[in-house]
Length: 544
Ligand code: HEM
Ligand SMILES: [Cu+2]
Image (cartoon, rainbow, N blue to C red):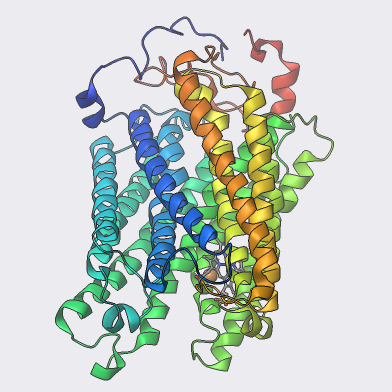
């Protein structure tokens, strides 16, 4: 494992070909990862603008900025974009694509053309959905609950459903590609229990992609069919069942929250062990808990339907199972903490993000237990408590880990270093802005402010003002990395092959990697994350 390889700074995947077409027709998983990075960043920006509009509207109790219809379209736009076009694809499509072959010592994914096709499908789905939003919008909320979405709404539900349907194929094909790659393309010596935990996370996520996505795709297609043909699948007036929609929808959408969080957990496992210079505690438990989460996640969808009219027995069972799925998540948090214990911790920007993740995810997860308790949920359902809970998990968790991952692997991706000071500042801004935005929403929800209303009693205003102020800080925290990361691509100092002195095959190739990843096929002879050995063996040391 030479830290500096001679090919450094010569030909690499970024400069091997020039011109727009060399990107749009690339079959290199690393370039495809960057194509996704561009698409997903644009979507995140658009979803973020809608969020700021919502928070601005909620600054005053009177609903002074926009009318009800516009407000409904605004939170629907926010939810649809953030869930389907940012959170679901972010880590797998950008970092999974870039890293998976590098981490397992392969030249590419199993099906490079399919991989490129997946990106085009994502972009097509995003384009159709954006067209639906721009040519009139959708007002159903991201959940598309029937019968409103089939009978009530006069907005562009059909076109948006089509866009999401298309994007689903991108997830399915990516999951398929990852599963085959992990099974078939590991380099010699890389046994299952030597795999990086990020790869385990991608494996578990891919299972959900394949098993879950077809269900949402069909469900949303049925909404479109029902709107077009009036055939009574979900519409009770025609003999359909609106609750059926909720069962189908949450059968995907609860597992989908694990599509968002499992990859983050993989990222955090990598970062925590690297910056505490400690062997990861309980490797096997972390690996297996990813699979447990993926499978148990399919058994808890009914906790979204406690007040929808399912039987009390069903409610009790779903409540119990929801507590059960918290166990493997708890296992991970415990193991990260044990890894930090007696570690030699340093606070580089990726680590600040990872530690922030652990704190926020823990709050999000514990408040999930409140909601999983049948009786408590009856009080909290459809209040701001829910909004706070899922933002702690999805924004405090998934978005935080995504940023941490971008910073951790940026030197590998771009071959350049960013300003560590700016990066730490923005990590802290994101953490503080986040808490100021969403913590007041737990209180608002507990006090009874319902979600999805833009006019509210004046006594809720103070907490809403805090929340809006926090959102502005959060917005700045998100904008900063965009600026200094893009800047570093051109002007940043060159990165060595392994700036963090980290374990893992991706750090043994140059930064940025050559088009074919490795000059010789790597061979693995030990466990992942043997930081004790790395730090005592001077040949691994950074040559700078
Ligand atoms: C692991 C990552 C998690 C994510 C990303 C997540 C995300 C979400 C989302 C998006 C909603 C809102 C659904 C809506 O719009 O109605 C929600 C609600 C809910 N979550 Fe979570 N959640 C996670 C973990 C948990 C855990 C661990 C539990 C329980 C053990 C839990 C229990 C609930 C319950 C019961 C609701 C429904 C509340 C209601 O509709 O009244 N969640 N979650
Ligand atoms: Cu759920």
